[in-house]
Image 1 (tube, rainbow, N blue to C red):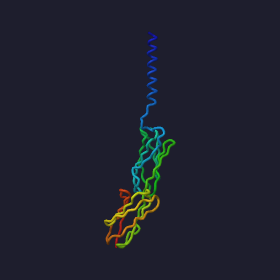
Image 2: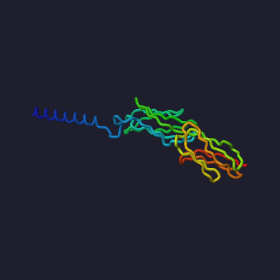
Image 3: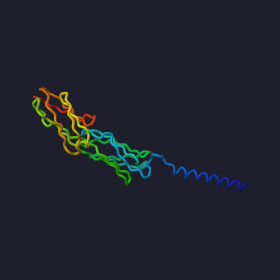
Image 4: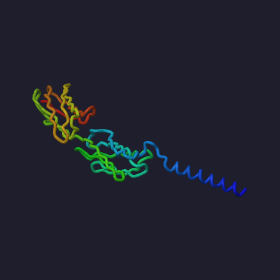
Length: 193
């Protein structure tokens, strides 16, 4: 009887050890797969100078700290079981802002653009040339200016300045709408006199 009891205990201990080993190596398939680099994405590519942006880091080691920095803001959050960390940070003015996520020894970056937009002349004579000056836009992005029912376009030039020329409409006061892509970035005032 003693021998049978000893065999039963040995079998149970073996089953417990095998179970612990198997469970110890089990990991969710999407959590920090080895060889997959940390990434960061932003909720928008172009934002206004004080807009809040949501950043997502993927492929962080689960349950570890991810430090986000964006302009003058920084915040650390803990990655979830899938290695995802999310934070909302406010834009610190106009410019090309580098956003960074750091997890353990890995770093990922992305750029968010907060255009600086101004009207060359806030008052101009009907039929004369005027322009909207736009700085800090992603290269190749479409910049659209709508004034007095007419549309004018150009493409972004990174940190360089783009002047979108337009013809001043008939006498009156106008809103000048400036879009980058499909997003309205500014509404400027024009006095045509």
